[in-house]
Image (tube, rainbow, N blue to C red; front, side, top):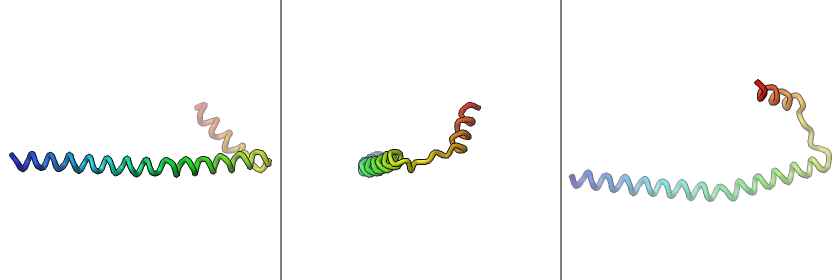
Length: 69
């Protein structure tokens, strides 16, 4: 019985540690993702303002048609 209690306690501790590690990785990734998104937004703004941004009308039409189905 004691070994069962110890095993349960060890599993609980291990699960908590894994959860904390996952949360730490996710929180570290969020600022990097925000920087990447900010960079993409800035690039899009620049290309729209300069007239370089081109819309693929065929792809847009296909997506719109799929949404209507």
